[in-house]
Image 1: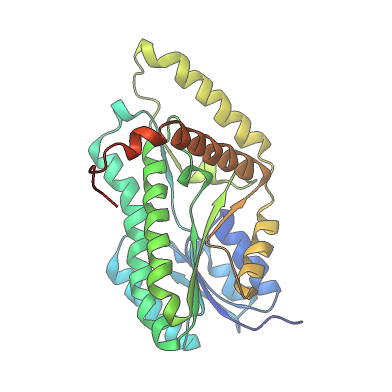
Image 2: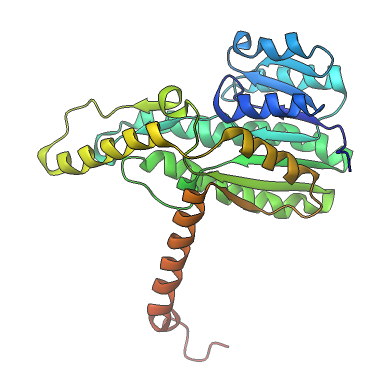
Length: 284
């Protein structure tokens, strides 16, 4: 059965998942508002697909930019069926040596920026009585990673926000799906990682950082995930009658999250008696 033609607004389309998803959807006859901070990096979508693509400048950290882009989308296509919150970056470094300004910048993009555009799109979807919000989290939204503490914090925050949101909007026929990718063959680790590990690393951390750097280099060169296959899955989710709240993408993501959840469950069971011992003696 042929899929419906829907209007997708995708953030962060200059590269990575956003670019792959925009290209895939346009090839499938969908309508795409492809956005990036620099409009010139996404202009090719509209040039190639003038009837079904709109290339816009959108900085999710700026409310005026968000409002302007959404209004332009409505002026052209009158609705937004799917919001894909893909734009983001990652600060790579140690807790002890990451400045407050760097931490705030991380949260501003990955969390507050996503909240900002989500809030702006919700009245549209609520009035339509339909919509789907795709939130790009990460395997790091479920599992804390060394040297990525504030990236993890931003994605943990996004996941809690998105789970709560899904319960608020279900009555308006608006669905929310959190995508949790593992390592994919994109240029994220070159373009979207903010490297701050060039600061002086004290001796106690050196061995740890060296091992993490080696791991990062390996992932950069051997990432197993295919972004076009991920794009196809996201399209299928939107067409599904019962999409999941969370979906890990990639065998590595599935294994990491499964192991993490199993470990959490073991620890919960181990400390169950202690957890319950704080109840009042006459508590029901």
